Image (cartoon, rainbow, N blue to C red; front, side):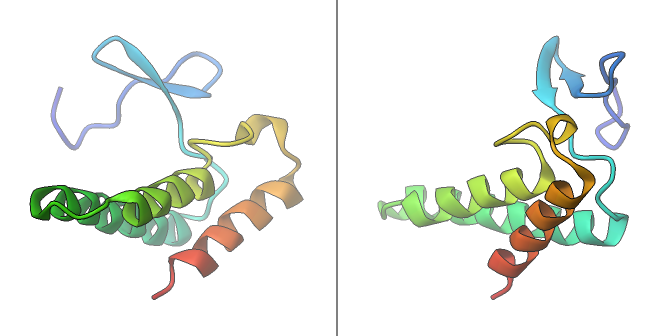
Length: 101
């Protein structure tokens, strides 16, 4: 599969399948500009985890930021398909606020 191709989803759209493993899909109702900002925050936090590990520092703070971004994207926490539209919007808006420098 091309690294930029969209991975296949389960029939219900709740999960993506990568190398035969199911992962929770990003909430499809997140506006693309918001999702892009949250993905940017996620990638920065992942880089910080790696940097902390390479330098022998505690990666806990960076890992917490990874978790917060994943929750905001709907990939962790209460499944997005079990939330009301208002709860979903509050989730990603909170994620944006906490990802700002």
